[in-house]
Image (cartoon, rainbow, N blue to C red; front, side, top):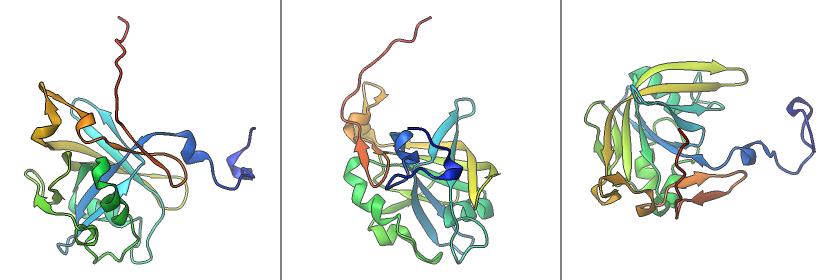
Length: 200
């Protein structure tokens, strides 16, 4: 089939997200200027550079109690920092619980029953049991066409890795099985790897 998104797809559900899979999930923690911790998963997330290490996450839509965007974007803009927590398969239910739309004064760490600890280089909480966390300083935000489509770029200023995920000096994702976002309501997890040597 072929369709132009502006004219609709004619299918029971929008296939767009299912075409871009699997997507890594950035479990973004932020803190409001009032000191309320916020936590939400974003599957429009990725790394964008090595030197310096930088990441991005994109927020779509808005909240009735926010003038612009959602809490993660708003807090990152207000404070200049955010933290990306890696999602393991064992944390899938907590991750899903933290995706619930909630007023800006609700702490999703409490909502999802997650322990937190303070970051080292930024004023923000991170998930204590996350396989890895990346502390980030906001570099810039970019507004995209559409209603409240905002991308945040951050420079990674600190990285936490759980010791039991390091095997022979390498970060072994099979130890925690990272969660990936598929289309519709579907997810996947990484359970095995294979290598390809890049040609020179």
